[in-house]
Length: 449
Ligand code: GLU
Image 1 (cartoon, rainbow, N blue to C red):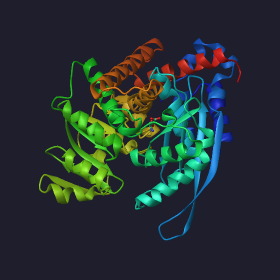
Image 2 (image 1 turned 90 degrees about the horizontal axis):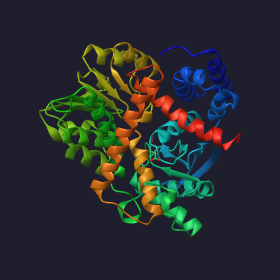
Image 3 (image 1 turned 60 degrees about the vertical axis):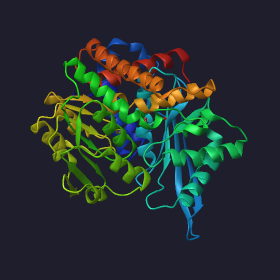
């Protein structure tokens, strides 16, 4: 990765100083700033209006207490967050993450990424993110419900279909969105479908939203392959994670003729040379909410479980990191390169460390950053908002075609923008610059606000 020029360096230093200790936010900001050198050289008007400095400062940050009572009758206290980062293009939009690692720096990095990702979709959505340090692992349905109700009892006053529209992320799926929507409806006495996305199909949700992030990532890779007159046919693919993004990435790879030979969770990974048994994985993770180690017991001979270790040690043609931030480091990237992996696409948000990204760039690996490759989730959320606004619901095929077209559009915009700004083939530069320019132009038009 090239260094930062002087003006951008000053902005980065300011980000570090004003957001002390928030390493993930610094990393996400630096990654974008690193691409913007040629943009500020061509467009001095952005600097004159302090567009980048304003972009790095969230419009609003909300932190609140979330008290709730567990099944043993003990009072628990968690912390809730919503960072409303940028609304130049539309209402704040982005998921909620429930995970013990959540603190302000994680929510800011996710919210910052979301601004550019949402811009790249071409749909009218701003960027935001929220969540809590609540750990859903091992909690009963009743505990999850009470937590969600308490969380929404504060959050409801900050959101709305024209203001801020949360959705899911790690630890927040259909069950949690249901409890959150129920509490919002009760408090406000409004059936305001467009206030949350990722809803169930019976009560305002969209077809394909569940599948969208994983499917979209694979559609993006398909576009990369097409530029090389290639396809998924016969490709060996490794996917990290086994949550919502990973499961539907695996499903689409299989539909397109590839073989997913490994996936993982935080405890370890499984290698299944015959190809991952998706029905088994879905039952294990979506229904039983179990651990990946149980996969091998059910699958028998063809699979083996490796406790700990790195799933990136498994040789593959294509790698799809779909677990969490900074899960693929420099050592992993070196292993992937040595094993002949040619494409890495981020299904998760910022799963590759800066060292990994640099190493892959030097080795000529095609690297699709999350803000482009995983934008299918939030894009389909915007399609859900469209359906809610028109009180309509679309068929699966129609919605999937819209998703595929959006991913093609993002891919082509990345390629064209990278060409225009002198970095042909660099999807990271293309995504950062195309997303930035779209938001920056809107911010210029709206004045200093
Ligand atoms: N959490 C997802 C993301 O990282 C989806 C957000 C949404 O649908 O609003 O983009």
